[in-house]
Image 1 (cartoon, helix red, strand yellow):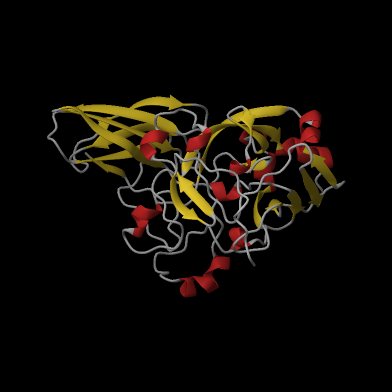
Image 2 (spheres, one colour):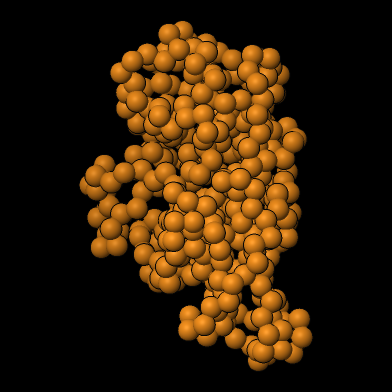
Length: 361
């Protein structure tokens, strides 16, 4: 299959490019932690094929499968029929910090640093409302999402799924989104319509969403069944992994994590550190600590931003009495007492890395 990358919209010049065909790029982490809500030109780009632009007025999503009535809805239809709601949620790639895991042992995937994350205000209609509108038939347990709108590397389309229970919980704010930071969603970030599943990894947030299928089973798509899974650390090659994909569950949430965005000497003896943290699947970030002696002594950081249960947490710390150079680490803890581990567990796909954050100054 030949993919044409010649007609893509312009990409942000502020991003660090990690791949060109398809275009994959992340923001410098030091820039990210300067903003509560991530500006569009700092929102990372993760693609499995060419980026294409579509007309919002005519673009439609087809809803079918185990429903009482199958419909095709344009974005004007969605806006006219359902209430638009907004949610602040962090979008994070499963491979965030992959290069750190790859330093332990080689991994498979795009080489990412710690900038494959964005915290945005998403606007759209609740998937729950749409499913109630079409009627879900008994015997179904999953909602499958697909984009046939543009070509894809590893399958005929990009697809994923989530449980019907997760899709319809009112408090979980699963959206068919057409806005990002109160502006129309651009093609670069999945516009004119993408899925937003707060608390889930970005692989489930299907871009250029054009098909929704209510089903008794998970999506059969490659990215649901043969990718974005955590295999045991004893699996060292794609050949060893091949018979195991079906035996392990697809990833949903990512673990408790924190990262240092910048560490700067503000005087000969004062160190100023800034970073972000993201919640665990079961509880929000309750605090962040930093250490300059390898974990013997921890200092509480000040949390400067947290908006609801789905956002990231920004934090800062000013420490006194330091030499001209050294290493600083951070770790997060959540409201249930879980603490970010010192070491991350290696896996072939290089996903879900959450060892202590680290920076040199």
